[in-house]
Length: 464
Image 1 (cartoon, rainbow, N blue to C red):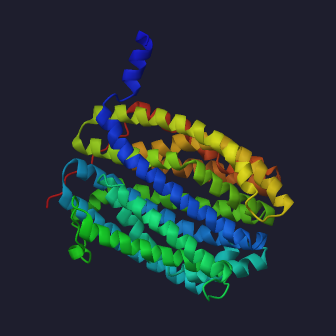
Image 2: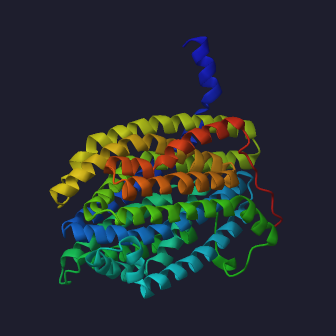
Image 3: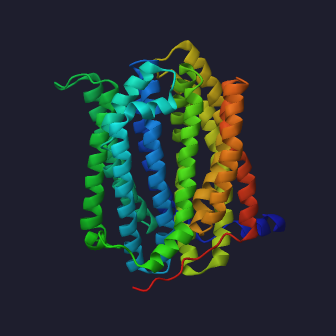
């Protein structure tokens, strides 16, 4: 290796084998978990897709409201991860447990709100996404009524798995995903098509299958954390007690911006669904198919994002800021390589997967076009995801990231998507590019932020 290459490698890549072992212990379970979760999503889409374009459009658009809740939960989990990873790095397990209590309190309240709204106003919610398709609204409303009971158990299970990951235990999420895969696929098959003596419920059967799987997830997470886990040793004895003001202050300083940022992401997803829902049934169906392939091909990126947030957060908690900067560059180059690989995978397997769906030729053609655009987008998606939701967030730079999300999602992607999709009626290729233009801009923006070194903000210690 030449001297120049050696200097470059030492500057931008961590050479400690223990670092890569730590990364892999988080990344591999997360990747496997994501593969299983996306496999479930794909099977859901394929099974519902056997019922026709209307069914797949209805379930896809109904799931956008459910996805909004998931994003809120991920925002809460991300806010907790910033604090739990840093406090775990500082060996302050008492505060880690109190952060966990706070997250559970918040997610239960949030799940109750979403559940009540979904049960009482399913038609109105569907009309937000699909105002001109009464058949899609009717089917989607049936799906949503059952979804109303999913929010609380799924929210609690998500928080449990993510907090476990923040203290270095990524296996819980994997175990839950494996069991959820089996339960969800089996329940979907029974309820959608009417097997083992049950009536064929169609789209409602898909929602019921998901409900059964989420309840099983909650049971597994609770048993694992209360009976098996030996590091955190969490017990819900203080779940009804509010944390100390000092912890609230740190949650507000480092955690709340992450919640707001992910909430804005959720609302942006809703806005995107509203744009897609105002185009055509073919575009709606194609979008659902492309998004499944996108998530399947980017599971390694999700793993790198999770690993980077935990590892960098723990390093910052230990007070080793120089090493955190070094780790940040390593994760950037890792994300770049994973992004290129993911783009190639979308091109290779994306079009072939379209044949698995029972869709019209028009929907097939739109899906092919959008798949090509997705292959271009995922490279930048990898960079911005690993840096924003991983490295910089783990370092506590949540306020800066919140501003970036506001600027690029709401001042670039959404307005441009409206113009390209609804005003200029351009090709679906350019519609997808426009709706993801924030990925391109944020990738460059965040590289400069990483280089500045101003992204490291350590959580303050809390008295027991």
